[in-house]
Image (cartoon, rainbow, N blue to C red; front, side):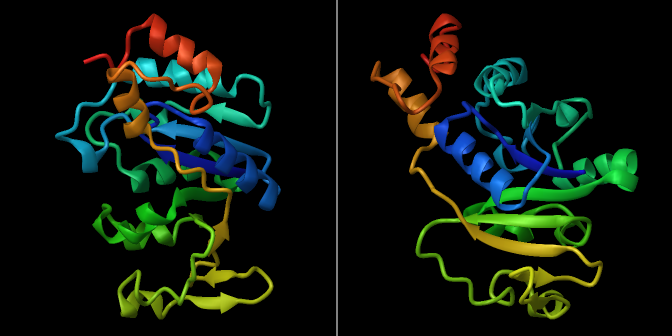
Length: 215
């Protein structure tokens, strides 16, 4: 089994998230992509984040017609902050025998990877897929990671990615990066502006019904 883990706040999930996940699913021939919202993102402790149950329902509505997309509440099951390294370790302990895991994130998030908890350990636990914008040029890992850690990875021509000492690969793949942000959607709702074609209709109706992002 080849699974993709797509983490984020998803406040709310939007068309850009869905399109990127669809393309990564296709590029790597994944069996499934799990949308995995953070319960208490350590980078956003001071931010006002919509209740997990609302974000959960919006994701489930957005993906309900795609059999290859699934929802995971694994980060809401644990107490405390949502650390990716703990999530990946948990999933691997539970499914490792039959699982090839791909951790999916955007280029901006990967550029900040050194601020993540136990980031070196995390990058050695599974494959990483860094979604890049058109025109992005990767010049190697040394400028993104520490030079000493990056030196453990070698470019694999066949995989078109950087293979690490544990055998897992860091891939950089260009996707159709729709310039949509959840923060902009929230602001548009506050300003009583349209969010048509930014989120699926079912998500738009859920936001309106539950009066999310009004204040």
